[in-house]
Image (tube, rainbow, N blue to C red; front, side, top):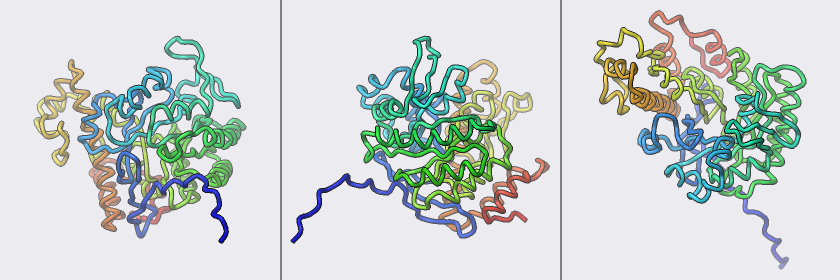
Length: 402
């Protein structure tokens, strides 16, 4: 009998388990099978850039049902630093978070901190906003930091340009992102317990995005992110790039649409086949006094709420809606930071509940009906009607509104 061949690396178990698919659109419900527990999807991930979501504690996030949130490699890597976080038991121990974590690679800071950065083939060099000299973030360094942080999902370092950028810089960024993916894969020390996602680039150019998709899907990675969108481009171009991406990404791996958090965008992009989302929108808009509701938002600083003793939303079971009135929150917003805490709790709960409702409708084979009901509430009653881009995107996904 022939001797057995030498054992190679044990392949990682599949990350995504699809449990239901919409019969009309590309929407699907599933689970992300991660080390700190299964995560139902489609899922919205609150952003905890520095190890905490602004305005809420980790315990409060968990109590709302959040099972995965997002930290940032660049910010955590510069302060407090990966060595200190690793000594605390990784980011889970440092922030006392028993659930899953995804860490962004630091690539987005090439856009958000563009005036402080310079990109070369080696990596991206930042002038520290903390006055500590220069920081060189290479693909290898990004993965080294993420390995130390111990996140459950790690992201490749990609070359990010604004979604409205045109010309040769877009092709350069796309091609470099493919090369940097290979460097990230080579540097990754814990592929079994930290699942590395590739990030599709290519701007708004269908040919470049298709080329990136073709190249990156040749790599054996557990999941894919759709990057370089939701940065101010026209919605008609946005949804077409999302659809192009989901059409070409493998069915058996999760599809993460980065930086998307508006309710309508979430519903449309689930219909187009996306599984994961993140955005600072719900926490950031809370800090401006805005509460998210199924019919849009309430600007609670406005005088009309001074004597309004209803909760933000009667159908919301979050702690803020159970305990406080619009009038109380209006009064607090004038002087008390506690108001921002209450609004952040509500807004995060709104996002998580929206995704839960989407998932339940897919499981019940009622997703097209859910979409029509959601849009009727969001845009009916004299609120201008459903935007044309939404109609076109949903029609392309297989859901007709008329």
